[in-house]
Image (cartoon, rainbow, N blue to C red; front, side, top):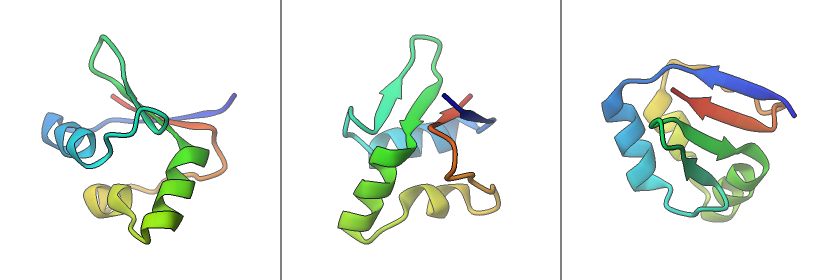
Length: 72
């Protein structure tokens, strides 16, 4: 299992939580971290023809070869 850890502001994490509500894609940990299943997110982005993470994270490079993004 591979993970990309990314530090975000609280506002960015809130925006991601509001944008992606599907629990098969996004899990909110008790400590406030957000965990994104990359395969499920890619399916979602393809089906919806949107890329909400890229829009929210603008300057942050995402590695789609990992299994999970963890936003701290």
